[in-house]
Image (cartoon, rainbow, N blue to C red):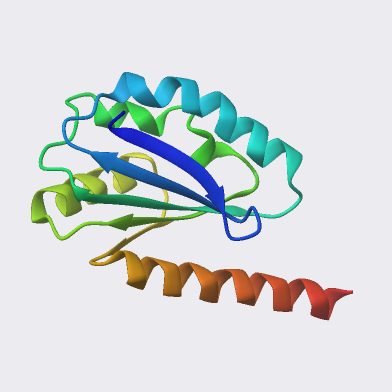
Length: 132
């Protein structure tokens, strides 16, 4: 399957691996899982979407901005997109503006995404501990 998803980092990161070709309808069954993950956990869940093997995005990719738990759920966190493609970077920029969100971060490598998401998680844990 060109799109896979798993929960990682003590249930704080949804990791997507997307390969080419992929179709948007492959995300439909994952949407319910994402909603359930977010509903069952009290903390934010961030996303790392590795798109390094993707050459073209599905034509209807912009429709994802409607009702995606990765954007609309109260515990949705930052979405780290891993890509070196200028095409994908520009589409993510358009998507971000249309979705009226600043939750997207584009990084060049998966290692960079993991470093950044761990920093965000550690910051959230520190804030939680200080408020207790």
